[in-house]
Length: 244
Ligand code: ADP
Figure (cartoon, rainbow, N blue to C red):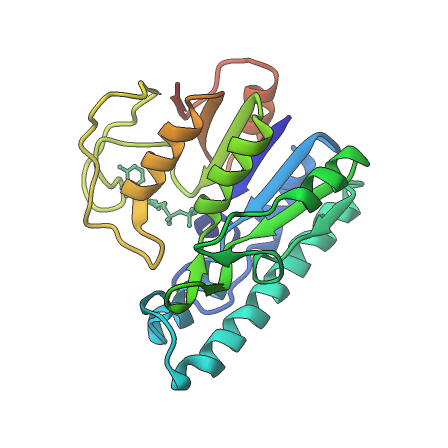
């Protein structure tokens, strides 16, 4: 099985509210297998901008209700755009919205994913607003879902697509950086902790990747070069990072 995350930085322009990269997603969809695949996507500018504005990760306050609702709706809009592209490419994609199946702080119930997979369908879930057992509301990030899905379904390969070539020794958008082609699990790589988004930035991502890598291979690839997905699937040489 393949588990893949379409990062928010790839599928949207993170700086412009609700700017969807349709052409990029269309190209990615062509490179994906049609079954035995689980798909997660990020929120990018459909989620993070308003999530910041309303400080969703800091918990419930009455005046945040409308922001919570708006993000929920915007994410469904993004999800639907992606679903339609996947279906147009003969991928039987079925949406599973985190706000309808999970409460943060409780056990993640993935039984629906299991059922759909057993029927040859392709579950698609995403970073979302969510109820939280302790603080009322929160954000459930795509990366967090990747970890839970990987733990349950043990995919042979897990791919994270972002807008850069892989994991670098520092933020490649801010400094001259070196791509790390092979990231051993226990290696204490110095990563930028200055990059922060509402779901924790690159440091958190790497922690999750390392945990997933305990059970299978994890790849970080540039989503703007979807031919690299095919190379990974065919065990050919590719540009990117392997977390092993
Ligand atoms: P997504 O939302 O697509 O999952 P993020 O935007 O959260 O991804 O993370 C990808 C971004 O992380 C890249 O655009 C890059 O600028 C930044 N980044 C910061 N530090 C690093 C690093 N050490 N290696 C790779 N990318 C990094």
